[in-house]
Image (cartoon, rainbow, N blue to C red; front, side):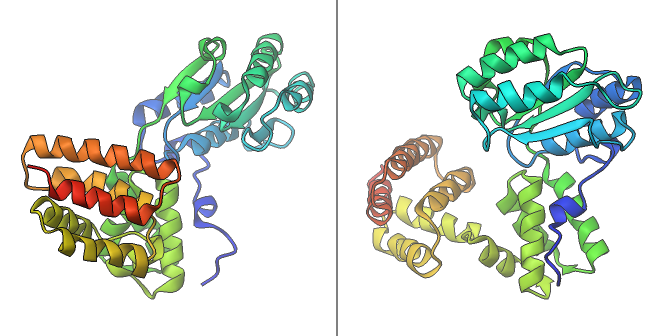
Length: 317
């Protein structure tokens, strides 16, 4: 199977109406496209929820597909200093527009990576060249965007996509690519993706390249994730005080399957709600997992820390 074209790009919608989910946001964007007019926009939300796709689809509809010379697409994580705002962005913003639309669009992805100095320079550029240029800023955390920029933009908050929306897209791609899948395999992708459409499609493509059929086992192997039932079993054993049995499962995840400690903690956190234990114990587990996640982030040895976590869980009463 060819992997030259990532399926994420191959099946990226060209129209706002084709974007998955976010019906209210799509209605607002379609109104801008119909009027061929828009204010500065700020898209905020988790990765893989359609921010870039929506921005490109909006630009495509406003300019009737003629994006050359009318759209500047940049990633702020690559160019995050004040120089890129003063030079590249400012030069594009003040040049004349092409075609009948009276403004051009600058799409600045991962805008929360811009330094505060660069954001302040960008604020002035947005104000000075608003007649000839509109900006779409995309970020994961709107709190990292300075307030003067937020006040100049119409804010759109993207949320994680429902599993039903992602599953529908996966089934469509499987049909178009001739990929065989079963329901458990698709559900495994939904579990790993956790509302991230981009991750779901990438996992689907990677699994299809390595396996003739999209199955649960193939998905978890490709994604390097533990099966949810293994994590639940490990937690249940630890809560019951069976430390050594729980540790055997942990060693299998760390040493045999090579799953990172942070990934195991994230999955443990997700599975707490599925445990048949009291609310007080669930609260205690959340508190412990948060503490040990901080330790791993600070650079502690993951095997020792996860062993210690299981030991603490085993002593909960």
